[in-house]
Image 1 (cartoon, rainbow, N blue to C red):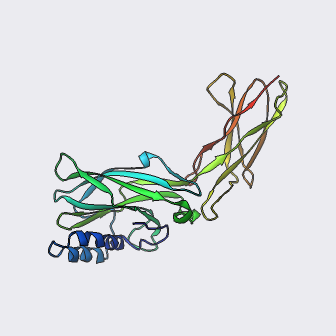
Image 2: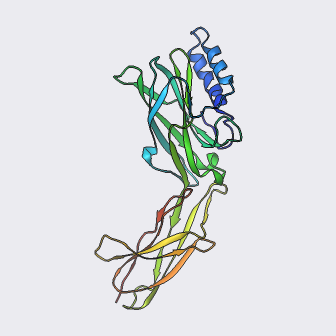
Image 3: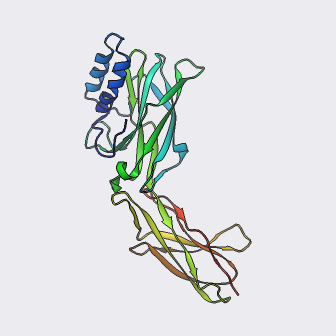
Length: 282
């Protein structure tokens, strides 16, 4: 199941209504199962984090790392979590969503679903299950709005073996960020000792609306130097990109070594480091 970025998830209750269909089919032999699910999903509720008897814990999104998306291809993101219910668990579902309130249309700015149902395996402890969900994110189609970069929340829902529904709309959080690229070029090369060298570069980031990378303006970047034979870079100065993402500054050449720019990133854009550019000092 896929829910593209937009207010497609109308509310936590509607999410459960959508999920109720496959569960109702699986539980069709249980008296009143479908009716119970539909009844629960139709209630006008605000989850305020969670509702129901199933408890979710130990959720880890993308191995604890930010989700960084370029403009093309597919990013597979694994989410692991534990679900606990003494009535057993028939099925769980997972969503990533962005917003302030999962129970209102206006409170949701984006949502992503999984292509397949999460896989849950009962542990040696009765009623406790370890689960894994995989989100296949396509930036070209799923992330057309640049404004959805930032913090996202994990919504988990479940049904026990008696078709009772539970959910928690804020089990864990992650950051979905735009990928960035950075270059560095030091000239002239070679250069005489004590002379000035100019280090230029450019910072760009993914634009999900256009499907291209564009210059990222007014952002700080550190100019760093690593002496030949050393493994350690030292920061020489910090400068800002111009309106088109271009970097340009000067420094004195003293010894052979590598120059690079480093961008620390922002809440919506991933960090990046330019490859070191070697300068031969004579």
